[in-house]
Image (cartoon, rainbow, N blue to C red; front, side):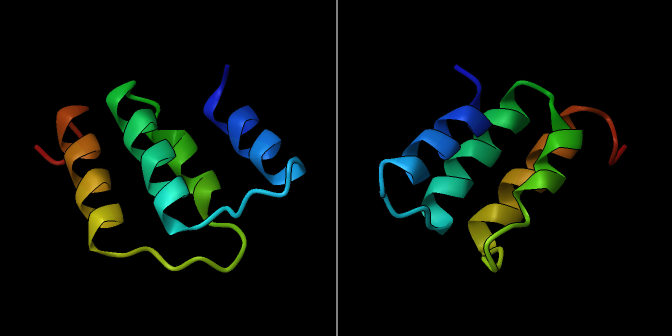
Amino acid sequence: MDAFELLRLMALKGLELNLISYNVVINGLCREGRMNETSQMRVRGLRPNERTYTKLIDGFSQQGFLN
């Protein structure tokens, strides 16, 4: 199951999607090297926090974008 599909299912079932949920998905996307998809996470008025930026920096660094 795709991460975005999981988030949609959670929302349909009435589960609260919060920054923790999104950080988990961002972490998974970064691990898989799907950095271009992390920009889609800017939804629902959530503001990134330190963990969000740390995961993004790690992901971009591992993919060679920050070398």
